[in-house]
Image (cartoon, rainbow, N blue to C red; front, side):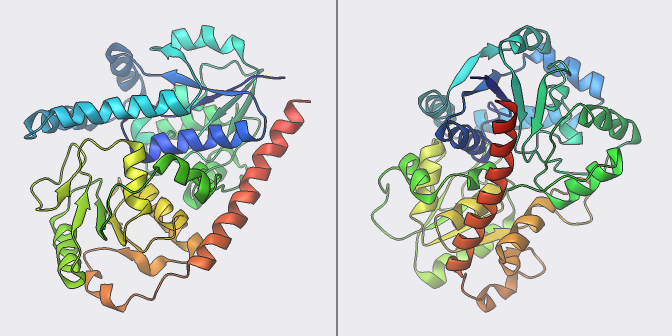
Length: 377
């Protein structure tokens, strides 16, 4: 049997990133393909060299510095340490990982052990975070390269980066993306029509995700809040909803916060706990793409706050526009301009959501399985 290796983010401490990595591996292993995730965590020297080579924004390192500072300044910094431990434990328990690699040079030696390579999903193709590793640049071009639903996140970038991206894209035998704007960018760069596929988290079932979530952590009703970008307007809205419904709020802050909200904080939550709080909530209030997906999979009511203004050059809203349109929940996408419309929202049609996710997941899954069946003959 041919050996398959997958490249995606595994070390950014993000719930959605970790769970999409798990989902694609599980989906393929359940379909009897021999797949492993390449455990790549670049050294600081490697990250600096890549930053210079790709001319990425200085805000990348400033952002990481601010996050580290935020963790240290938090009243219980050991909870962030516990959170990282739970992430590592979750991956080791539930995924098949290679040994750890720290540089592209190490990867070029490692890839000789595999026949087929997949990259995806998440924003691994972001021009703002550009890294040739996730375009499979370390893999020889005579190997089979497949892109399953990677996201560009933002599509506004320099002409120089567009030329580089175009060169990487041409080395792929099979290409797909996660958003319609990514589809348009690929067509612009290499004149190639490519399909939009669903995020890997949709490829495995509600009951399978329930296995990872475990038994309920709370016996009472509650609202779950998860914000990647602290926003006082959204916090105020959640407090208002909490008061109106008479329900407490559980929040998992990032290293950026928000802290001191008066909500029940669970900074140390790992991926299983994060899933658990979504699975059993009465309402989820989030600005997270994957928060929206898992609310839909678990058939829980949700509000999806916009993280970015559409006028922002670094807006990542394209992914939530594609997702909410697919699921028929555009009215659940809330920003500061329509926050007063919360009382006017129609109930979510969960039967439609379930059927749509099932249909789209089957279509996307078949696309990938047919490719692998052909290449593994």
